[in-house]
Length: 235
Image (cartoon, rainbow, N blue to C red; front, side):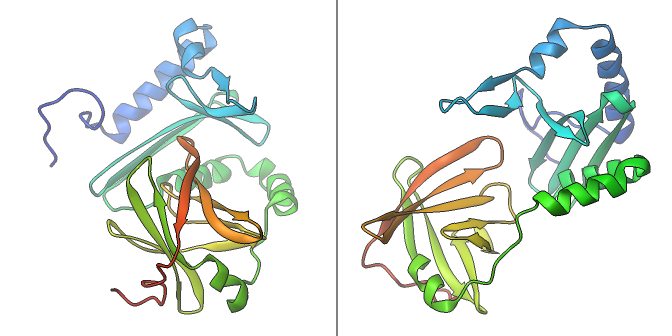
């Protein structure tokens, strides 16, 4: 059991039953028009005027035409996600004691709780979902190398491993990337779930990284002349 002397983030331990109680309370507050809850889910615009999915405390997105209010938590080997669908009158709480992705599990449960819309949702999802593409080795070789963020003072290595494009960082396991098309990839982990490579005179000079709803277009510069660590073998 983790134990912290500080108050705030990561200092709350709860149960599925407690989270269910909170969901009922929030549902009642939403029905009564509580301005505090409205503020928590209020979304602001980004610098490019695009709407931010993260509100002032909770994340709000659309699910099958209804509002989905949610928030996640993680520390050490614990993962959690709370999902509320107020318009349908239900919610899902997922608590895990292993490092997994509780958010997709929560939405999977929600899909089963609303079977009437499942077929319609699946059809719409297949139409809009971006399908992965096969990445040829000669194209993949353009992306290989070392990339550095001056802002975070950290580095990632893009390498070829088992015929796949992978990302390596000293604090994480190697992560396989899914190629979505020209200079675009997505990852399976929240901290680096999207990469858009940038070019200068046709040559890759870095990439912009997204990390969930909290980090967007974080700049990484390609470190020229550093091609070690790109074969999949640890240096």
